[in-house]
Length: 113
Length: 110
Image 1 (tube, rainbow over the protein chains, first blue to last red):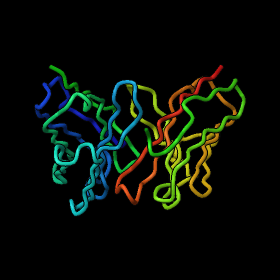
Image 2: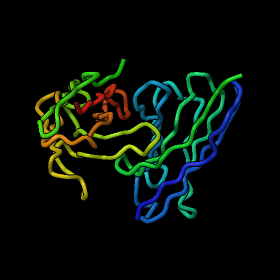
Image 3: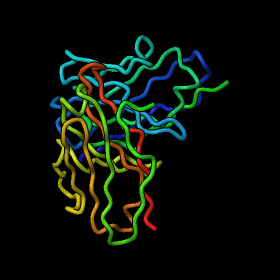
Image 4: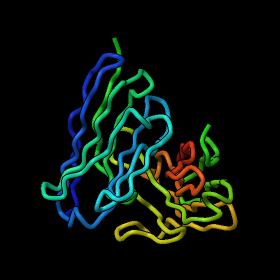
């Protein structure tokens, strides 16, 4: 069974940093694009970033470019999202996904003073 | 303002057929395939349709998708109370170099 479990969310002050992790199991992690997406309170789903199997292609939504970094460790079946210079508008539930097909349950990030 | 446009709400009675539209442009729906998701806040989004009209295993055939030009639609037949959820369309956008979503449609089963 495919499983994606996000962790690392929490409360952080504006300007702070947080590193999200996603532990993958039940499939060959190194064979798939991986994705981070989010849903802010009262808003819809928003794609944040994705990364190709071998890191050779990485894309970000404009609002996080230069602040967020997506990475992966194929040996540890893990996906990461380093979030720096966090803003109130980054407050959301962050989801990890295999490609755009199978999604985790999310981890909550709150940016507030 | 979402790149893909969906109606904010839809409704139907049990057993009815409802459709949800998704309008885009040449750089997204016009050039790439469309996915549809079902989402209840606090849970994992669930893929209902991929590649415009393909159902993942386990998704009932009551759910169907179609695409024409720069628009797509999700149809749900034999509406059930458990179908009450938010529905989102998504597609890759060649100009933005990223995935774009519709704003979501809240489906109410009356």
